[in-house]
View (cartoon, rainbow, N blue to C red):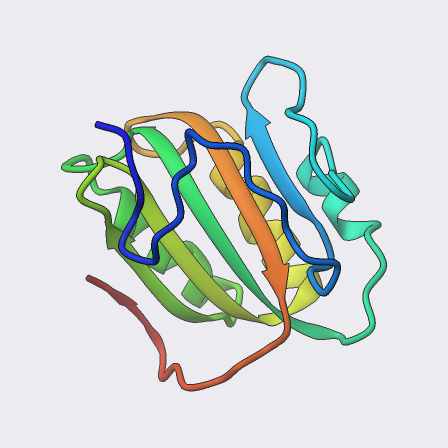
Length: 143
């Protein structure tokens, strides 16, 4: 299923992002990177991105066979292990959306785990962006 998510973003359409984002990345596991502003090609490159603040917000959209396989529970377990706050939720189009806040290095570690081996199901693509810390989370929950 394609089309906009609940925030109105349509990931099948080219979108221009403002310059206030640290960077936006669209990663296909095993393929070349899509073109976009300030793009990183791996989670380790994400760690090398310019960072004004030691804490940040990571929003990631994970595509593949990631619903009904314990993926959100696995994300929550990893996020709590890393001391992060946030949420993992199923989207109607079959993706899982993860919003996590905390130490930037720990967020990069979570991103690496999302992209790496050992995830439940099968991850085909991870799209992510960095934002400033907003707060408002208590713990890490599954929706």
